[in-house]
Length: 106
Image (cartoon, rainbow, N blue to C red; front, side, top):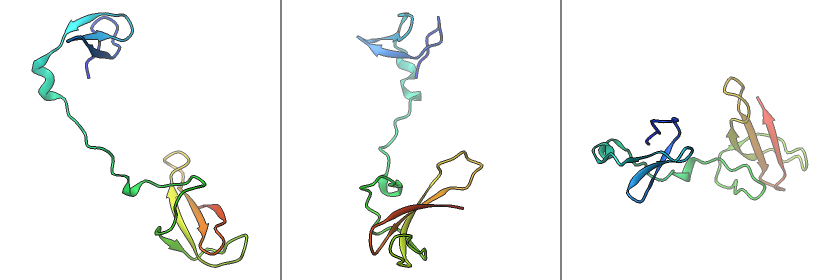
């Protein structure tokens, strides 16, 4: 990533040179710095936690939790940090019997 020498904003490549997104300042691309840039792989989605209504909980870990709707005593769950880092994570449950959803706070 290259930043503008004039205003400090991020620059983008345009027509073979680097152009500032804010002030329009342009500079030659620094081909020597190209080796410094790192490309990353696409995100592995196997550990992504789904909490949306249509999320597929089947295959997720199970817990001995009583469903508030039907009273069944086993549910799938996922964990997500919904508050700040110093707060405990939220557990999202889905009943294996009736499909009801609820959340639990530690």
